[in-house]
Image 1 (cartoon, rainbow, N blue to C red):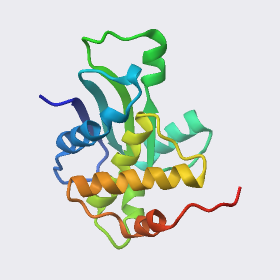
Image 2 (cartoon, rainbow, N blue to C red):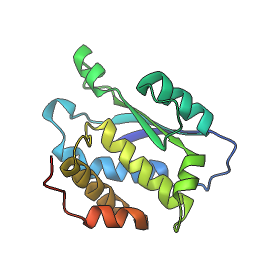
Image 3 (tube, helix red, strand yellow):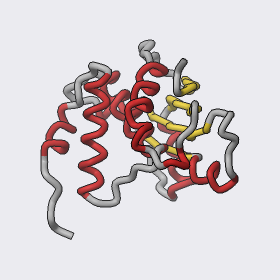
Image 4 (cartoon, rainbow, N blue to C red):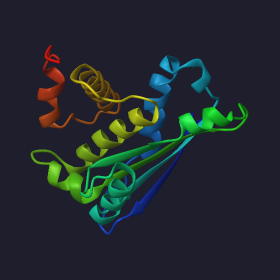
Length: 174
């Protein structure tokens, strides 16, 4: 039985290849679940992965982050809200939504396949749903390293531009 019940929504006009999103995100969650805080442990989880155009992600970015421009990925984590209200341990724990702009991902996919970029961004979004963040270089390096590990877990090459960032040690500057 899968640990994650994933809803995948295609809300953009771009045609995307049929990738095993359910399997990949389930494998990533299974990989990291033992590291999750005790009160985030659940028998199963739910999440949504939504592929959109620049207009939709720009509106979300403007509404929720006050940044009136497209971005590559947004994650709307539900765990804090769910835990504040309590959750039924017999029911799946809803993690939240990962929203990816396909046109922005396409622009970023220079030197590698769009599919690779989309997988990279989905890993990044899932980590945000699980409470990871990158307010400083050290935490960004940890997050990028985890994303690299997950892509290797599902045999997807790491985007070349990220390899440089992952291999760079965090700066000691404030």
